[in-house]
Length: 162
Image: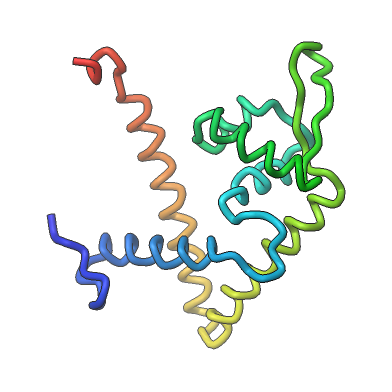
């Protein structure tokens, strides 16, 4: 396996993907002065933007994080009025979390700032290059998701414990 060189152009598609993910992740997680919440909570907010309300355990499972981590982040968001809890109609002992109207506005603004950052970078690209990038990144994301699903299916806890 080659060592990833961060100060040189990637020598393979694999290195290029890793370099892109590291750079994009770092830049998209950078806190903007107008951000009201830590960017580490963005995956939670994004998931909640796509649903009405859900249990913390389901939220954690959907984004692939430990429930205790998600619980801590939800508490931080709740303290800032970004999310709110409601009773779970299916189970009186449980609660659901959802974005508050204030939280939805805050998160949409944060995502819009990041969208504009990427839009500015891609603005000088030709339509053909943008279309090709869209096609290839969509394909890569689907293939990575499928590979992760297969890795999860292949994982045998009793084998791993040996």
